[in-house]
Image 1: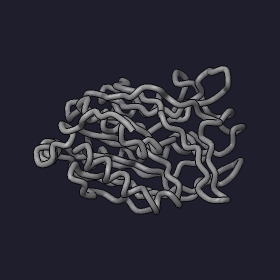
Image 2: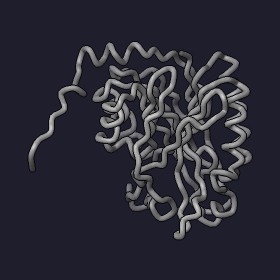
Image 3: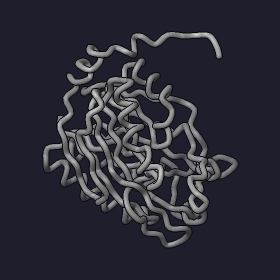
Image 4: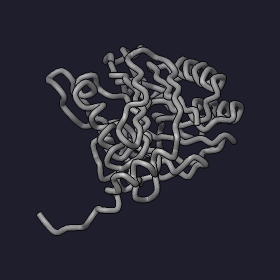
Length: 276
């Protein structure tokens, strides 16, 4: 099936970001795409808590989600909204980093809240404390589709192989890893981690990414690595989107999953063990 990774450079104005994504999805559908994927925090990239409080919404009120559900139905495509930053109503005021799989009928087929929070100090100048603003999820999500079960993850989740193995053992044929990856860790680890997750599970790994220097009206400027990747179940790179925003279309053959797993059935060889 024709699949597309949508690589974008979101700023802190959700309306501007939505228009960018809608144009790209229309272009993808015109090329015959049946499944399109957007990156993490499609609606808003911002390091300013006050700006997030100003522009983010609860899921039920979010205009990006409503508009993209309608567009998926109009285009008749499956759509992974990599994630949206959303208000939650939690007492501590933290947001959700929530991924959505939308069916061609416009309905939400599945939603997943990012489990692992990016709390790291990459360099003396580059520090992230995602858990200060976002609350982690606590549930792995597998979504059934006509083209195979989809295991949903987000960005930093890629560093935790047990999550991806659990999704694959539960039936996932496709793993989604939408991201807004740091340029430093992206250059060092992005491709290696994604290929490893594909090889060890025998799944397609589809990783649409944010890219570039993100427009901001308030707060610290942010940059992301780009290089959206599609990886085959054998670990081959099917798409590398480079660093420019754009639409990257490729053919995804579900038969490759069974072929890879027949050659190396490592998922069936996992054993429990004692220690250390």
